[in-house]
Amino acid sequence: MATASYPMDGVAGQVKRPALAEYFTWSIDHKIIGVQYIVTSLFFFIIAGALAMLIRWELMTPEITVMADGSQYNTLFSIHGTMMIFTWIVPFWAGLGNYLIPLMLGAKDMAFPWLNAFAFWLLPPSGFLLILGFFIGPAEAGWTSYPPLSTIYSPDGQTLWALSIHLVGLSSILGAINFIVTIKNMRPPSMGWFQMPLFAWATLATSIIVVLATPFLAGALTLLLLDRVAGTTFFDATSGGDVLLWQNIFWFYSHPAVYIMILPGFGVLSEVLAIHSRKPIFGYRMIALSSMAIAIVGFTVWAHHMFTSLQPELRIPFMITSMIIAVPTGIKIFGWLGTIWGGRIRLNSANLFSLGFLSLFVIGGISGVMLAAVPVNIHMHDTYFVVSHFHFVLYGGSVFAIYSALYHWWPKITGRMLDERLGKIHFVTTYIGFLGTFMPQHIVGMQGMPRRVAVYDPQFQDLNVLISLFSFLLGISTFFLLYNMVVSTVAGRVAGANPWRALTLEWQTTSPPPAYNFAGEPVPFEDPYGYGTDASKAYLDAMESRFGPSPGAEEERRPPSGALPEPQPAGD
Image (spheres, rainbow, N blue to C red):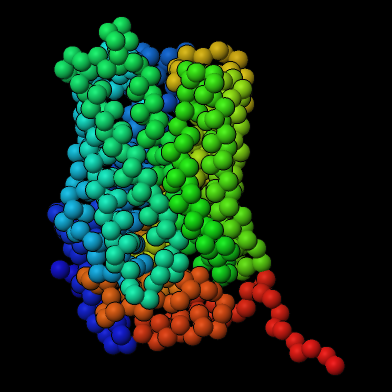
């Protein structure tokens, strides 16, 4: 075991840092498991991103020029979408939650450490099953895998696809149970429900969705596998089955799954914007409870994905619920705007990506409300307008939040700061590349260009060339992050325990934390977002006396630009 000296409780202590080999073996330390999740998901993100570049290369011309045929193109977008969702975004949030939740709650570990490790080790086989499909005939029915495309017309790799998603689902369920029990039972006595960090609230809401929704996906996948390998006809309409059964079960999981991918990002924004604006969070309770509202209402909107196949009399109720779901999300957005209003906003990489999330997710939310309207949805169904909306929500939302989280918590995980110059280059290239890629897709979608096709009307070529060029910039932008992470790990500036002068408990221990997180029992501050108050300054000063000075100390001591003036005594 490598060791490094870190101050603990005012005296020098030896904090054991895991050797590199430990990250490739079974471990029940939640921090090692968290890093395993994060690194594994980044690996599959790179593969899925490479497939995206091939998709955009193919779409630079209206005929098939890069792929051998349409089936190969079908494989590209099928595996790209599946990997991005099931082996990148979902596992990353599981990894970040694994690392942070026990630290935020002042706990020594997750409630069920062995189960935690088992849940992670289901993930690598899942991703490699998807890759294995390339050698026996990969899945080509899209990430939604509608029958009969996924039962009759897809090669054997479609069976591996179903097995892969089964493993991801089981991993998610086990992890969610662990999160719920940990958050419920392992908070310190002085931390009530409304003293929890908002990232913990978001993780709790996400876990509730996972536990309730994922078994439905597991059931649908089981029926799909039986149709493929056992000769059953659950989805064969010619033999008494129902092809719409898959759509109903799949979307009953997959629309709540959108919130599985975005709710943790909401939690990240609540942490980052408050800390880097030096302002108390605006509307803490409403932001916390809106996460639970999303978890509940999210189960009532699945059929808006089926407006073109749904009975007409059922469209209006689902249109209404699809619009109602925007309300709790809007509460969060107004809460974040109220938080940064009048604050001293630090334009560092973490905050830039959070602010970028805010701007892009609003665009995705507006197009989502448009698609919730039946006439618009039917007109735009299966066009590039839907592709644009989807990516504004899940790339402009989830991935921007992931980047923000990496820049924000990287010092805690590694003890090193990421380079801010590279981080800002990463942000600018990502933001420009993203807008140039997905904003024009609204236009070609409204003009009628269908998604999931390699051959399209030549009138759309000019815009597709523009989209592809910007997508290559978006792909290149990722390498700034990867390079930054490697250089930071080897030679980055030492971060100290609390470089942001934050109030939540994960910053009140060394960076990286010791084996069991804290020396002694941590005492949480009564308001985890009470920045700018005399009590918070005294609390942070006490922490600095234990862990050494923080780079953010001097800035914290200056009053925010939007702070209210001191009250003056009344005149005669």
